[in-house]
Image 1 (spheres, rainbow, N blue to C red):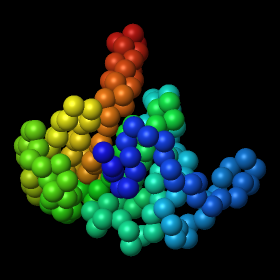
Image 2: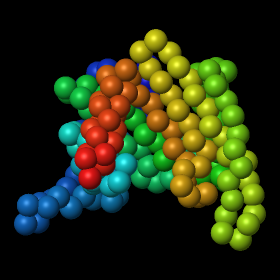
Image 3: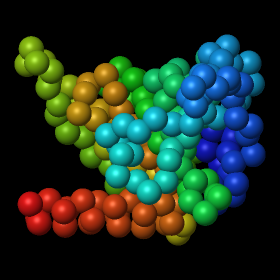
Length: 177
């Protein structure tokens, strides 16, 4: 199965983006002309993982219109690509994202909408869809905790096991407090 031109369950075959080191910190060239990867930074979605995420960088005109640039995060486990998270523009882009997913994966295993609301009280329908396959799960949230952000999570069974283990460990730590 491929995602954004990369094969899940195989090593990432894309080179690192051009960079210079300044005091031990990599500074990446922002003029991306061919696909490349950068070290990901730890944010709240990945902070508890034992592996460091990477970010796929594409020339700006190669991103689908629903992708929130630079919104393609990858996780390798044991040297193989096992998880890809694609961050979207949320409520405004969820229809385009869902249509692309439907074309690629077919009818979702489960589909629902839920109402979300902005601070002014306006309500919107947000899509939640899941495609489950033997060795892969694709989950789409039209919005996250923000209306202007959604996410597509494509994870192999190995990645799902890692995320479940991490969530279980975090919950155990919370209980101990």
